[in-house]
Image (cartoon, rainbow, N blue to C red; front, side, top):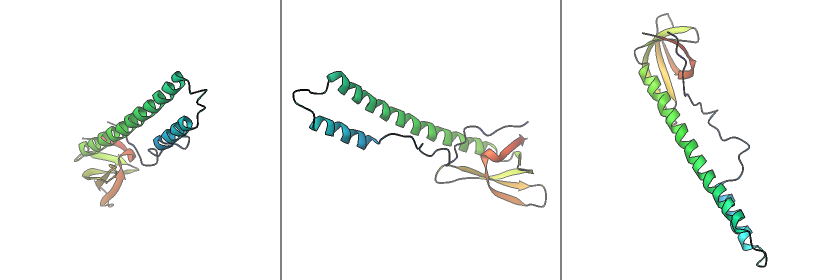
Length: 135
């Protein structure tokens, strides 16, 4: 039975996109500067001010959701890797039994596979490289 690795987050895909706007601190600095230098005779419209605060709140919520999703995916990938202990797997042409799972400080799971051929033990195999799992 072939099973693809699901929910694996590699460190290269978890990087912050280049098109992200400004940070929370920068946003607050801009907002305070805008308030500080506004014309007292033409103050910022209340609806515009509330809209900016709403955008800031939405940014914070989206960042928190993104962080929690990444954590959840990392935990799921680790659980999936642990579930492969003792299973026969195929990866990159090599077939063997998963003998150990190592989880790095960043949460990335790597497998150690004892092969049936002359290769011995293959270490540091990424979960995403597993192409087939059999009992």
